[in-house]
Image (cartoon, rainbow, N blue to C red; front, top):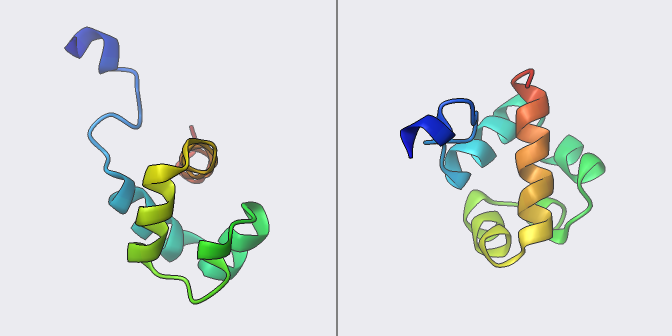
Length: 73
């Protein structure tokens, strides 16, 4: 199984770590411009975003893609 994950840049990175990185890198306003979801616009927080993203696969995928873009992948 380790062989299948060695080239996966998301392996071992939690959703919380991804969000914290994105907030530090872009800020909530830019994140909302890039990915239009209310949890980035209306009183944004890591906690509320995690709750939404854990339930909403399409939004989580967009956040993961933005993270990969931000780290140059």
